[in-house]
Image (cartoon, rainbow, N blue to C red; front, side, top):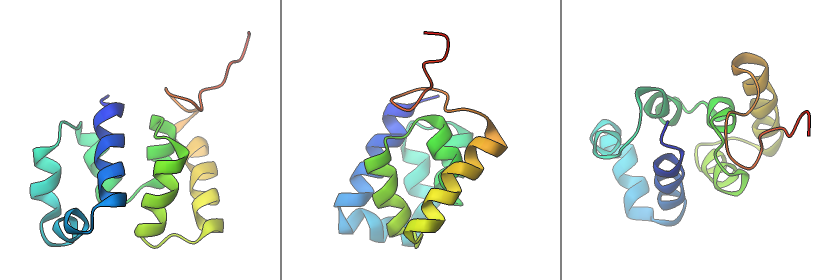
Length: 101
């Protein structure tokens, strides 16, 4: 998994209107240029906010990406809960659970 590259792309999409236009016009080309796994590309393409959360994408980055893709706040929160239910606990990053510590 390339969490760094996933977060980098989402961060850039959140900040760069030209890159957002490119996502709308040539999503597959943009995703192909990024060092992402097939799972990461699918999560961005759909968008699967829950999967991105479980992958470990930073909440600040993910929150803005979700809003950009049309998620209302309550739907964003529900998508993260559903992501954990569907895909299991957060895999890496800041939001992993420190169980047993």
